[in-house]
Image (cartoon, rainbow, N blue to C red; front, side):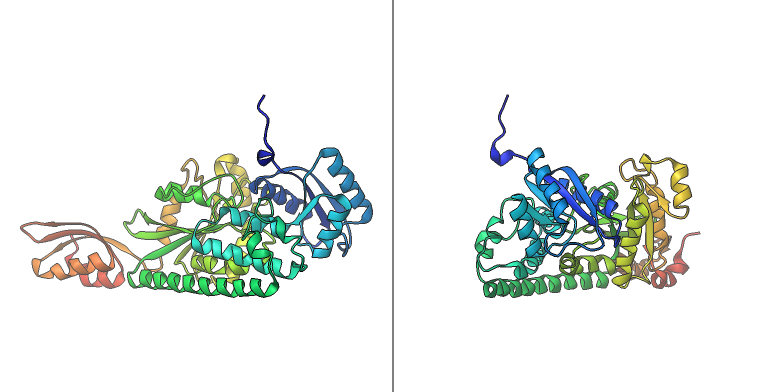
Length: 416
């Protein structure tokens, strides 16, 4: 039997939660299980304690901490993951008592983001969020920081950048902010170019692991990473999608959302989320097979509202309906569109819904234009969608999708 080396050993984690009644602790703990798995560790077991408030020194009570220490020894656990953001004192005291490394929910999510980031902007945003989170936690000795680099709560900028003084880190933060401002300028230029060219954008938003990348691949063959993991997609992807009406839109895949997303990350990825918020049409995708489907929809809707999307058409879509009984979905969500990105069920209805919610009513027309109106054909080619054109003895035969302005110019030449 082949032995597994230390480098290949999977980190075994204990999940710890304190239920103060401020949120659904059980659902949040279930999500923490998925987050730990997405980070590459093995969530072995969990402990939850009901308290009026978390203990300021040790997060859990001293009796529960003793139980945690015993559990870690018996089950040979390497890591404790707490389902809240911990103070440096809480981490230090828990580690001293249990002799096991302790990380919090924020550190875990930052770690997953660092693992998933591929684009320059994504990497800059992750590093900025990490440094902002770590800066107030520096002790001056660099003990906590020296562990960065290995994974499971330790991925990041690295030892050389973090075992320095606060002044150096603050300089790095300002440098990252400036680089991100340059990236944002480039993003705005691309957005203005799309608006000038009349490109319609449609963004897919939703809870992490709702199937956004699978839907993107189904609609556009984009080849986006689609895995059953939280935050499988971090960097936004854009692809062209041709609708049944003949109109072409730019489809944008975005980073997934999660409940109690650390404010460090909301701020860092705001520009990415605003890319979706400024789209002409938004698809709010939800995993219908999840018991938390209604909560997930609320999380997404709340964020869209905070980004100022009240006037943007939002198509609410329930995905993974192949895993459900039709009657259940119809009873719980009677007015929402039901699809399966995996099987293709309902995709035609989704495409029609996008067509119906386009910002400008587009019309598909068949035209027979006299040769002296060739300039109108060129205008359609530049400003709308020219599906086909053919020069005949009678004139120019053209099939096109046009907006209301071009329709008014071409309506006298529509073939009956």
